[in-house]
Length: 293
Image (cartoon, rainbow, N blue to C red; front, side, top):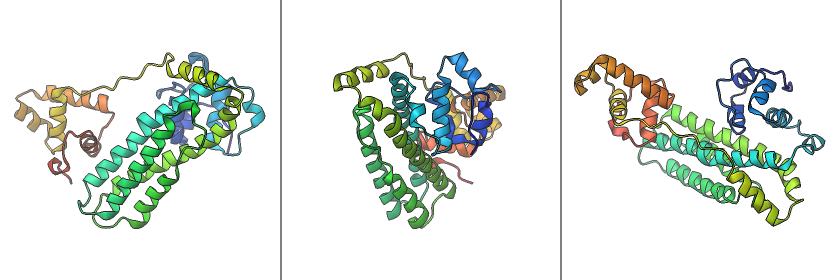
């Protein structure tokens, strides 16, 4: 696989390798990068281009890593990256699996022993992972990923009865993405972070953990739907057309269109099927209330 470098256009890499999107997010790089090179973006955001290139190339090629190359990086940015990775797992990747799994089970047969077993395995994985992640830099062993393989095996080999194939695939994809990320993360941790932490005593590690946990990173506020937007979203998912929504709520058609535009902007979801999943995942509607084509 070709190695990416400073002159590589980031958007072209992301278009080909979607798995790198959460990786760049951990460095504070958001989508909408245009046609800028990785070097341009790092200069604009005051980021270490060599460290970012190393991490991205490791994700693309498991033979890329070099201990000599990694030794040049300072501990604090390395520790900060690993802390951002932990936050990404806790607040994004694991909740994403949980939402897809919840919707998948909700729209499948209520009496399905395989799905009950699947849910049990997932919550066991989540409990183990959170327990490890909560230790931060003091965690010494690998992060668990074997249970994710079991979840995929149950879905691929053992689930029977009536269930939503698309949601099944969504669960498999999100589980597989996290599994691959955890495997690479464990390898990076052993090769980059652990050797540098071994040079510190427990007090120094505690101080470093405090610095990266209480840094200047401000959490992104989730854009919540207004009461009226939620009301219109429910009507959309139930199969109502714009004119029907306007008549039911006694508002103009233009007002409905404006609210739909706001809903799209806040959720980032364009399709009715996607909005349906959003409603079920966020408890806005039960599966019985949804119009399923």
